[in-house]
Length: 463
Image (cartoon, rainbow, N blue to C red):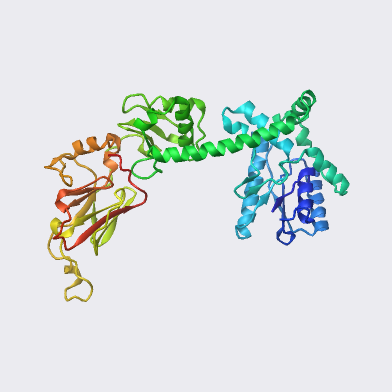
Protein backbone atom coordinates (compact mmCIF):
# COMPACT_ATOMS: atom_id res chain seq x y z
CA UNK A 1 0.00 0.00 0.00
CA UNK A 2 1.37 3.41 -0.95
CA UNK A 3 0.34 6.54 0.95
CA UNK A 4 -0.15 9.14 -1.80
CA UNK A 5 -0.68 12.79 -0.91
CA UNK A 6 -0.26 14.01 -4.48
CA UNK A 7 3.07 15.68 -3.72
CA UNK A 8 6.21 15.00 -5.73
CA UNK A 9 7.71 12.40 -3.35
CA UNK A 10 4.69 10.12 -3.01
CA UNK A 11 3.87 10.56 -6.72
CA UNK A 12 7.40 9.47 -7.60
CA UNK A 13 7.17 6.48 -5.23
CA UNK A 14 3.85 5.27 -6.63
CA UNK A 15 5.09 5.54 -10.22
CA UNK A 16 8.30 3.62 -9.39
CA UNK A 17 6.36 0.78 -7.79
CA UNK A 18 3.58 0.67 -10.37
CA UNK A 19 5.89 0.59 -13.41
CA UNK A 20 8.20 -2.11 -12.10
CA UNK A 21 11.20 0.17 -11.61
CA UNK A 22 11.56 -1.42 -8.16
CA UNK A 23 11.92 -5.11 -9.13
CA UNK A 24 10.84 -6.66 -5.84
CA UNK A 25 7.50 -4.81 -5.87
CA UNK A 26 4.61 -6.68 -7.45
CA UNK A 27 2.25 -4.45 -9.40
CA UNK A 28 -0.54 -7.02 -9.10
CA UNK A 29 -0.57 -6.54 -5.32
CA UNK A 30 -0.21 -2.76 -5.27
CA UNK A 31 -2.84 -0.32 -4.05
CA UNK A 32 -2.88 3.36 -3.08
CA UNK A 33 -4.41 5.34 -0.22
CA UNK A 34 -5.16 9.07 -0.22
CA UNK A 35 -6.46 10.83 2.90
CA UNK A 36 -8.22 14.17 2.34
CA UNK A 37 -8.28 16.37 5.46
CA UNK A 38 -9.95 19.28 3.64
CA UNK A 39 -7.58 21.75 5.32
CA UNK A 40 -6.95 23.83 2.15
CA UNK A 41 -10.46 23.83 0.73
CA UNK A 42 -10.41 23.75 -3.11
CA UNK A 43 -6.69 22.88 -3.11
CA UNK A 44 -7.36 19.73 -1.08
CA UNK A 45 -10.04 18.72 -3.57
CA UNK A 46 -7.64 19.37 -6.42
CA UNK A 47 -5.03 17.13 -4.76
CA UNK A 48 -7.57 14.32 -4.54
CA UNK A 49 -8.48 14.68 -8.23
CA UNK A 50 -4.78 14.61 -9.12
CA UNK A 51 -4.26 11.36 -7.18
CA UNK A 52 -7.36 9.80 -8.75
CA UNK A 53 -6.11 10.65 -12.23
CA UNK A 54 -2.62 9.26 -11.49
CA UNK A 55 -3.98 5.96 -10.13
CA UNK A 56 -6.31 5.62 -13.12
CA UNK A 57 -3.39 6.20 -15.48
CA UNK A 58 -1.24 3.62 -13.67
CA UNK A 59 -4.18 1.22 -13.16
CA UNK A 60 -3.58 1.08 -9.40
CA UNK A 61 -6.62 0.53 -7.12
CA UNK A 62 -7.19 3.62 -4.96
CA UNK A 63 -8.95 4.14 -1.65
CA UNK A 64 -9.80 7.72 -0.64
CA UNK A 65 -10.57 8.46 3.00
CA UNK A 66 -12.11 11.77 4.06
CA UNK A 67 -10.84 12.77 7.51
CA UNK A 68 -11.65 16.43 8.30
CA UNK A 69 -9.53 18.24 10.89
CA UNK A 70 -10.16 21.34 12.93
CA UNK A 71 -7.47 24.05 12.74
CA UNK A 72 -8.49 25.33 16.16
CA UNK A 73 -6.84 22.49 18.10
CA UNK A 74 -3.08 22.26 18.68
CA UNK A 75 -0.37 20.38 16.76
CA UNK A 76 -2.25 20.17 13.50
CA UNK A 77 0.49 18.33 11.59
CA UNK A 78 0.83 15.62 14.24
CA UNK A 79 -2.93 15.07 14.40
CA UNK A 80 -3.15 14.82 10.62
CA UNK A 81 -0.29 12.30 10.55
CA UNK A 82 -1.96 10.16 13.22
CA UNK A 83 -5.23 10.13 11.26
CA UNK A 84 -3.49 9.09 8.05
CA UNK A 85 -1.63 6.28 9.75
CA UNK A 86 -4.77 5.03 11.43
CA UNK A 87 -6.55 5.00 8.08
CA UNK A 88 -3.67 3.04 6.52
CA UNK A 89 -3.62 0.46 9.31
CA UNK A 90 -7.40 0.04 9.12
CA UNK A 91 -7.22 -0.49 5.36
CA UNK A 92 -4.39 -2.99 5.73
CA UNK A 93 -6.39 -4.91 8.32
CA UNK A 94 -9.47 -4.96 6.10
CA UNK A 95 -7.31 -6.48 3.35
CA UNK A 96 -6.27 -9.35 5.61
CA UNK A 97 -3.55 -7.71 7.67
CA UNK A 98 -0.71 -8.87 5.41
CA UNK A 99 1.55 -6.45 3.58
CA UNK A 100 3.51 -3.24 3.98
CA UNK A 101 2.69 0.45 3.93
CA UNK A 102 5.09 2.56 1.86
CA UNK A 103 5.76 6.20 2.77
CA UNK A 104 7.40 8.75 0.48
CA UNK A 105 9.91 10.17 3.00
CA UNK A 106 13.21 11.24 1.43
CA UNK A 107 16.73 11.88 2.67
CA UNK A 108 15.81 15.55 3.14
CA UNK A 109 12.87 14.53 5.35
CA UNK A 110 15.27 12.36 7.35
CA UNK A 111 17.65 15.25 8.06
CA UNK A 112 14.78 17.62 8.89
CA UNK A 113 13.53 15.02 11.38
CA UNK A 114 17.01 14.66 12.87
CA UNK A 115 17.43 18.42 13.33
CA UNK A 116 13.94 18.76 14.76
CA UNK A 117 14.45 15.96 17.30
CA UNK A 118 17.93 17.12 18.32
CA UNK A 119 16.47 20.58 18.95
CA UNK A 120 13.58 19.19 21.00
CA UNK A 121 14.87 16.08 22.77
CA UNK A 122 18.09 14.85 24.37
CA UNK A 123 19.55 11.39 23.93
CA UNK A 124 20.85 9.07 21.25
CA UNK A 125 17.36 8.25 20.01
CA UNK A 126 17.00 11.84 18.78
CA UNK A 127 19.91 11.26 16.39
CA UNK A 128 18.53 8.05 14.94
CA UNK A 129 15.85 9.66 12.80
CA UNK A 130 13.39 7.55 10.79
CA UNK A 131 13.94 3.90 9.93
CA UNK A 132 13.82 2.47 6.38
CA UNK A 133 11.73 -0.39 7.77
CA UNK A 134 9.77 -0.33 11.01
CA UNK A 135 7.06 -2.95 11.41
CA UNK A 136 4.64 -2.61 8.50
CA UNK A 137 6.02 0.83 7.58
CA UNK A 138 8.65 1.08 4.82
CA UNK A 139 10.40 4.13 3.33
CA UNK A 140 11.93 3.12 -0.03
CA UNK A 141 13.07 6.69 -0.86
CA UNK A 142 14.90 7.42 2.39
CA UNK A 143 18.24 7.51 0.57
CA UNK A 144 16.97 9.80 -2.21
CA UNK A 145 17.21 13.63 -2.24
CA UNK A 146 14.04 15.65 -2.74
CA UNK A 147 15.51 17.29 -5.84
CA UNK A 148 15.83 13.82 -7.39
CA UNK A 149 12.14 13.01 -6.91
CA UNK A 150 11.26 16.35 -8.52
CA UNK A 151 13.52 15.61 -11.48
CA UNK A 152 12.01 12.12 -11.83
CA UNK A 153 8.48 13.56 -11.95
CA UNK A 154 9.54 16.03 -14.61
CA UNK A 155 11.23 13.35 -16.73
CA UNK A 156 8.19 11.06 -16.47
CA UNK A 157 5.80 14.00 -17.07
CA UNK A 158 4.02 13.38 -13.76
CA UNK A 159 1.89 16.21 -12.44
CA UNK A 160 2.18 16.73 -8.69
CA UNK A 161 0.68 19.05 -6.10
CA UNK A 162 2.48 21.73 -4.11
CA UNK A 163 1.29 21.81 -0.49
CA UNK A 164 1.53 25.34 0.90
CA UNK A 165 1.84 23.80 4.37
CA UNK A 166 5.30 22.53 3.47
CA UNK A 167 6.59 26.09 3.13
CA UNK A 168 4.40 27.75 5.79
CA UNK A 169 6.79 29.48 8.26
CA UNK A 170 4.28 28.83 11.04
CA UNK A 171 5.63 25.28 11.20
CA UNK A 172 9.09 24.53 12.62
CA UNK A 173 9.77 21.85 10.02
CA UNK A 174 8.97 24.29 7.21
CA UNK A 175 11.50 26.78 8.62
CA UNK A 176 14.12 24.02 8.80
CA UNK A 177 13.34 23.04 5.19
CA UNK A 178 13.42 26.56 3.78
CA UNK A 179 16.19 28.12 5.85
CA UNK A 180 18.43 25.76 7.80
CA UNK A 181 19.10 22.96 5.31
CA UNK A 182 20.02 25.24 2.36
CA UNK A 183 22.28 27.40 4.57
CA UNK A 184 23.95 24.32 6.08
CA UNK A 185 24.56 22.80 2.67
CA UNK A 186 25.95 26.12 1.39
CA UNK A 187 28.37 26.36 4.32
CA UNK A 188 29.34 22.67 4.22
CA UNK A 189 28.64 21.03 0.87
CA UNK A 190 27.47 17.46 1.42
CA UNK A 191 26.34 18.19 4.99
CA UNK A 192 22.79 16.94 4.43
CA UNK A 193 23.88 13.56 3.09
CA UNK A 194 26.46 13.23 5.88
CA UNK A 195 23.78 13.99 8.46
CA UNK A 196 21.54 11.31 6.95
CA UNK A 197 24.39 8.82 7.30
CA UNK A 198 24.79 9.94 10.91
CA UNK A 199 21.12 9.12 11.51
CA UNK A 200 21.62 5.69 9.97
CA UNK A 201 24.69 4.91 12.13
CA UNK A 202 22.95 6.26 15.24
CA UNK A 203 19.93 4.03 14.55
CA UNK A 204 22.21 0.99 14.32
CA UNK A 205 23.84 1.97 17.61
CA UNK A 206 20.49 2.51 19.34
CA UNK A 207 19.26 -0.88 18.13
CA UNK A 208 22.38 -2.55 19.54
CA UNK A 209 22.03 -0.72 22.85
CA UNK A 210 18.38 -1.80 23.11
CA UNK A 211 19.30 -5.45 22.55
CA UNK A 212 22.05 -5.25 25.17
CA UNK A 213 19.81 -3.36 27.59
CA UNK A 214 17.00 -5.90 27.24
CA UNK A 215 19.42 -8.76 27.91
CA UNK A 216 20.77 -6.94 30.96
CA UNK A 217 17.25 -6.23 32.20
CA UNK A 218 16.59 -9.96 32.20
CA UNK A 219 19.83 -10.58 34.10
CA UNK A 220 18.80 -7.97 36.67
CA UNK A 221 15.55 -9.78 37.33
CA UNK A 222 13.14 -7.76 35.17
CA UNK A 223 9.64 -9.19 35.30
CA UNK A 224 6.74 -8.14 33.15
CA UNK A 225 3.82 -6.51 35.00
CA UNK A 226 1.67 -9.09 36.69
CA UNK A 227 -0.63 -9.20 39.69
CA UNK A 228 -0.01 -8.72 42.48
CA UNK A 229 3.36 -7.01 41.84
CA UNK A 230 4.70 -4.90 38.99
CA UNK A 231 8.03 -5.19 37.14
CA UNK A 232 11.15 -5.20 39.31
CA UNK A 233 14.93 -4.94 39.08
CA UNK A 234 17.52 -6.29 41.53
CA UNK A 235 18.95 -3.33 43.46
CA UNK A 236 22.25 -5.00 44.44
CA UNK A 237 22.99 -5.75 40.79
CA UNK A 238 21.72 -2.39 39.58
CA UNK A 239 23.88 -0.49 42.06
CA UNK A 240 27.05 -2.13 40.73
CA UNK A 241 26.60 -0.56 37.28
CA UNK A 242 28.32 2.75 36.37
CA UNK A 243 25.88 5.64 36.65
CA UNK A 244 25.70 6.25 32.89
CA UNK A 245 24.97 2.59 32.13
CA UNK A 246 22.46 2.42 34.99
CA UNK A 247 20.53 5.44 33.77
CA UNK A 248 20.48 4.14 30.22
CA UNK A 249 19.06 0.90 31.56
CA UNK A 250 16.48 2.69 33.71
CA UNK A 251 15.38 4.70 30.67
CA UNK A 252 14.74 1.43 28.82
CA UNK A 253 13.07 -0.08 31.90
CA UNK A 254 10.65 2.83 32.37
CA UNK A 255 10.04 3.03 28.63
CA UNK A 256 8.39 -0.40 28.77
CA UNK A 257 5.52 1.03 30.80
CA UNK A 258 2.34 1.86 28.86
CA UNK A 259 2.36 5.34 27.28
CA UNK A 260 5.34 6.51 29.36
CA UNK A 261 8.14 8.45 27.65
CA UNK A 262 10.80 8.85 30.36
CA UNK A 263 12.62 12.18 30.51
CA UNK A 264 16.18 12.65 31.76
CA UNK A 265 14.80 14.27 34.93
CA UNK A 266 12.47 11.35 35.60
CA UNK A 267 15.24 8.79 35.06
CA UNK A 268 17.51 10.73 37.43
CA UNK A 269 14.78 10.77 40.10
CA UNK A 270 14.26 6.99 39.84
CA UNK A 271 18.04 6.48 39.86
CA UNK A 272 18.06 8.30 43.20
CA UNK A 273 16.09 5.39 44.68
CA UNK A 274 18.97 2.98 44.02
CA UNK A 275 21.04 4.39 46.87
CA UNK A 276 18.12 5.48 49.03
CA UNK A 277 16.30 3.94 51.95
CA UNK A 278 13.67 1.22 51.62
CA UNK A 279 10.17 2.58 51.17
CA UNK A 280 11.16 5.69 49.19
CA UNK A 281 9.15 6.27 46.04
CA UNK A 282 8.88 8.45 42.94
CA UNK A 283 5.54 9.23 41.28
CA UNK A 284 5.57 8.55 37.53
CA UNK A 285 3.20 9.76 34.79
CA UNK A 286 -0.02 7.80 34.46
CA UNK A 287 -0.31 7.14 38.18
CA UNK A 288 2.56 4.63 38.32
CA UNK A 289 4.88 4.66 41.32
CA UNK A 290 8.54 3.59 41.42
CA UNK A 291 9.35 2.16 44.85
CA UNK A 292 12.48 0.86 46.55
CA UNK A 293 11.39 -2.21 48.53
CA UNK A 294 14.09 -4.26 50.24
CA UNK A 295 16.35 -5.55 47.45
CA UNK A 296 14.09 -4.58 44.55
CA UNK A 297 13.26 -1.51 42.54
CA UNK A 298 9.60 -1.91 41.58
CA UNK A 299 7.08 -0.04 39.49
CA UNK A 300 3.58 -0.33 40.87
CA UNK A 301 0.45 0.17 38.80
CA UNK A 302 -1.89 3.01 39.86
CA UNK A 303 -4.14 0.74 41.95
CA UNK A 304 -1.10 -0.68 43.74
CA UNK A 305 0.53 2.59 44.71
CA UNK A 306 -0.85 2.53 48.24
CA UNK A 307 -1.75 -0.13 50.79
CA UNK A 308 -5.19 -1.65 50.21
CA UNK A 309 -7.89 0.22 52.08
CA UNK A 310 -10.18 -1.55 54.51
CA UNK A 311 -12.63 -3.80 52.71
CA UNK A 312 -10.63 -3.74 49.42
CA UNK A 313 -8.71 -6.97 50.01
CA UNK A 314 -10.48 -9.78 48.13
CA UNK A 315 -12.53 -12.05 50.41
CA UNK A 316 -11.65 -15.75 50.85
CA UNK A 317 -12.88 -18.10 48.13
CA UNK A 318 -13.16 -21.90 48.20
CA UNK A 319 -10.82 -23.86 45.90
CA UNK A 320 -12.39 -27.13 44.69
CA UNK A 321 -10.30 -30.19 43.84
CA UNK A 322 -10.32 -30.51 40.90
CA UNK A 323 -11.25 -26.97 39.96
CA UNK A 324 -10.21 -23.35 40.13
CA UNK A 325 -10.93 -20.10 41.96
CA UNK A 326 -10.37 -16.47 40.94
CA UNK A 327 -8.89 -14.26 43.62
CA UNK A 328 -7.39 -10.79 43.26
CA UNK A 329 -7.00 -11.00 39.48
CA UNK A 330 -5.34 -14.42 39.57
CA UNK A 331 -6.80 -17.78 38.73
CA UNK A 332 -5.70 -20.44 41.21
CA UNK A 333 -6.12 -24.06 40.12
CA UNK A 334 -6.04 -27.37 41.96
CA UNK A 335 -5.96 -30.90 40.56
CA UNK A 336 -4.82 -34.42 41.41
CA UNK A 337 -2.16 -35.31 38.84
CA UNK A 338 -0.45 -38.59 37.90
CA UNK A 339 2.92 -37.66 39.37
CA UNK A 340 5.39 -35.08 40.58
CA UNK A 341 7.80 -33.08 38.44
CA UNK A 342 10.14 -30.20 39.19
CA UNK A 343 7.78 -27.21 39.52
CA UNK A 344 8.00 -23.82 37.85
CA UNK A 345 8.17 -22.20 41.27
CA UNK A 346 6.68 -18.86 40.30
CA UNK A 347 3.53 -20.55 39.00
CA UNK A 348 3.02 -23.91 40.68
CA UNK A 349 3.76 -26.35 43.47
CA UNK A 350 3.10 -30.01 44.26
CA UNK A 351 1.89 -31.46 47.57
CA UNK A 352 0.91 -34.82 49.03
CA UNK A 353 -2.91 -34.83 48.94
CA UNK A 354 -3.16 -37.51 51.64
CA UNK A 355 -0.72 -35.69 53.94
CA UNK A 356 -3.00 -32.67 53.68
CA UNK A 357 -6.03 -34.82 54.51
CA UNK A 358 -7.84 -34.11 51.25
CA UNK A 359 -10.71 -36.52 50.61
CA UNK A 360 -10.58 -39.02 47.78
CA UNK A 361 -12.44 -37.75 44.69
CA UNK A 362 -14.40 -40.43 42.86
CA UNK A 363 -14.90 -40.28 39.13
CA UNK A 364 -18.31 -40.38 37.45
CA UNK A 365 -20.13 -43.72 37.65
CA UNK A 366 -18.15 -45.06 40.62
CA UNK A 367 -21.14 -45.86 42.77
CA UNK A 368 -21.54 -42.76 44.88
CA UNK A 369 -23.94 -39.84 44.63
CA UNK A 370 -22.15 -36.80 43.03
CA UNK A 371 -22.88 -34.67 46.08
CA UNK A 372 -20.93 -37.16 48.21
CA UNK A 373 -17.95 -37.74 45.97
CA UNK A 374 -15.55 -35.64 48.04
CA UNK A 375 -16.45 -37.47 51.23
CA UNK A 376 -15.14 -36.18 54.56
CA UNK A 377 -11.81 -34.39 54.94
CA UNK A 378 -10.08 -31.04 54.64
CA UNK A 379 -10.94 -28.43 51.99
CA UNK A 380 -8.88 -25.74 50.26
CA UNK A 381 -9.38 -21.97 50.46
CA UNK A 382 -7.65 -18.98 48.85
CA UNK A 383 -7.35 -15.81 50.89
CA UNK A 384 -5.00 -13.00 51.97
CA UNK A 385 -2.73 -12.99 55.01
CA UNK A 386 -4.42 -12.37 58.35
CA UNK A 387 -2.99 -11.35 61.74
CA UNK A 388 -2.01 -14.46 63.68
CA UNK A 389 -1.22 -16.59 60.61
CA UNK A 390 1.69 -18.98 61.08
CA UNK A 391 3.62 -21.00 58.52
CA UNK A 392 6.10 -23.86 58.50
CA UNK A 393 8.04 -23.85 55.24
CA UNK A 394 9.21 -27.05 53.56
CA UNK A 395 12.33 -28.21 55.42
CA UNK A 396 12.01 -25.61 58.21
CA UNK A 397 12.39 -26.78 61.85
CA UNK A 398 9.17 -25.18 63.07
CA UNK A 399 6.34 -22.72 62.61
CA UNK A 400 6.86 -18.97 62.39
CA UNK A 401 4.63 -15.94 62.14
CA UNK A 402 3.68 -15.55 58.50
CA UNK A 403 4.38 -11.80 58.63
CA UNK A 404 7.99 -12.57 59.67
CA UNK A 405 8.33 -15.07 56.81
CA UNK A 406 7.13 -12.42 54.34
CA UNK A 407 9.63 -9.91 55.72
CA UNK A 408 12.45 -12.43 55.17
CA UNK A 409 11.21 -13.02 51.63
CA UNK A 410 11.35 -9.28 50.93
CA UNK A 411 7.64 -9.00 50.17
CA UNK A 412 6.71 -5.30 50.55
CA UNK A 413 4.23 -4.52 53.30
CA UNK A 414 2.02 -2.59 50.87
CA UNK A 415 1.63 -5.71 48.73
CA UNK A 416 1.30 -8.53 51.23
CA UNK A 417 -2.49 -8.30 51.28
CA UNK A 418 -2.47 -8.88 47.50
CA UNK A 419 -0.55 -12.14 47.64
CA UNK A 420 -2.79 -15.26 47.46
CA UNK A 421 -2.39 -17.91 50.13
CA UNK A 422 -3.79 -21.42 49.74
CA UNK A 423 -5.03 -22.95 52.97
CA UNK A 424 -5.95 -26.53 53.76
CA UNK A 425 -8.40 -26.25 56.58
CA UNK A 426 -6.94 -23.51 58.77
CA UNK A 427 -3.30 -24.02 57.76
CA UNK A 428 -1.41 -22.15 55.05
CA UNK A 429 0.08 -24.73 52.67
CA UNK A 430 1.27 -22.47 49.82
CA UNK A 431 2.40 -18.85 49.65
CA UNK A 432 1.69 -18.60 45.95
CA UNK A 433 4.87 -18.16 43.95
CA UNK A 434 7.11 -18.32 47.03
CA UNK A 435 7.02 -21.19 49.52
CA UNK A 436 5.36 -24.58 50.06
CA UNK A 437 4.48 -25.90 53.51
CA UNK A 438 6.20 -28.85 55.24
CA UNK A 439 2.82 -30.47 55.81
CA UNK A 440 2.43 -31.29 52.13
CA UNK A 441 5.93 -32.77 51.66
CA UNK A 442 6.07 -35.35 48.86
CA UNK A 443 7.95 -38.55 49.73
CA UNK A 444 8.32 -42.16 48.71
CA UNK A 445 5.00 -43.06 50.30
CA UNK A 446 3.07 -40.37 48.38
CA UNK A 447 0.22 -41.90 46.41
CA UNK A 448 -1.82 -38.88 45.38
CA UNK A 449 -0.11 -35.72 44.11
CA UNK A 450 -1.91 -32.37 44.33
CA UNK A 451 -0.82 -29.68 41.88
CA UNK A 452 -1.54 -26.04 42.72
CA UNK A 453 -0.97 -23.43 40.05
CA UNK A 454 -1.79 -19.86 39.01
CA UNK A 455 -2.79 -18.13 35.78
CA UNK A 456 -3.14 -14.47 34.94
CA UNK A 457 0.55 -13.60 35.06
CA UNK A 458 3.58 -14.87 36.97
CA UNK A 459 4.03 -14.06 40.63
CA UNK A 460 7.60 -12.80 41.12
CA UNK A 461 9.86 -14.96 43.25
CA UNK A 462 11.81 -12.28 45.09
CA UNK A 463 13.08 -14.33 48.00
